[in-house]
Length: 111
Image (cartoon, rainbow, N blue to C red):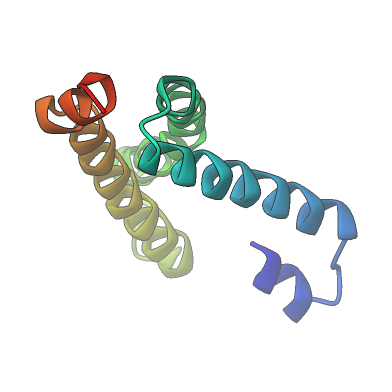
């Protein structure tokens, strides 16, 4: 999104701030997982569940294009929706891995 704004000369520092804030949050709590921090694990899972909601827009938009029969004329929107749908499936796969038994045993196991 930031790259699109830069290309259109509509860049705002607020979007860069929020991207850096979210990235810093994940990096900080990701390093917390190496020390087996239970709080970091809970924060990452909770924040990830919040971030899955906007990712649902891409498959819904793709479905709306399919139902309306507007796929031929809106190629860019279809490509963006397909990429967003793939991103959603990868995100869900990573969240399932995060909640797997091995990761939970690593976090809540003995140090």
